[in-house]
Image (cartoon, rainbow, N blue to C red; front, side, top):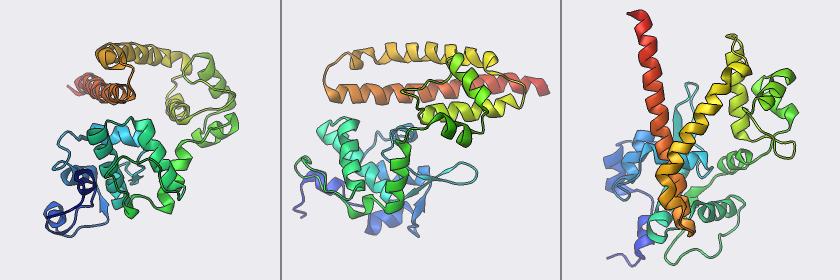
Length: 256
């Protein structure tokens, strides 16, 4: 019988018969379905939305194919096990877990880990550390223009219509995604003044999500705050799926 503490046993990588049962050849790269297959036995509540939420928070950084599909390495799977176990068994907020992973990415041993929690050496690689570091960078206006392909005039227009915001003269990854999308839309004749309703719709959607998670968000403990944010993300993903389906239905009618 294993002498490892329960949490430490849960954080061990999938090996042997269990690994072969997941995928016979045990490749080094997995799609999101294969990752879920490896995790659901120990973490039945894990979903694709939750994995995407962790990616958004920078806890994992899967690679992308040319078509945009996620490709997960063993380090990503191990990090997911670590995050899920700490949330389930110790109710730690994501900020604390992120601090542990950031320390690991810097080559340091995370301090004050809960009893029984172990760190797998496969949880980090030099490439992964570089990608995680890049997610937290701040962009100047010049960098935003360069990476999004937007003109200075478009960036100024996006700022004036409130589609992006700057903090101390710098922009984040959200602003970059907005700028990229608006740059592409501008080629179809859609200008920022046409896109302001999207911001208003996003604010209304957030208000709806905020009301749903209010009971959790009103609690003062960090664990409840973390669960509220995660729940809000999951609801938002469902709202986006609903929005996409409704718009696609309208487009489909053009062919009828």
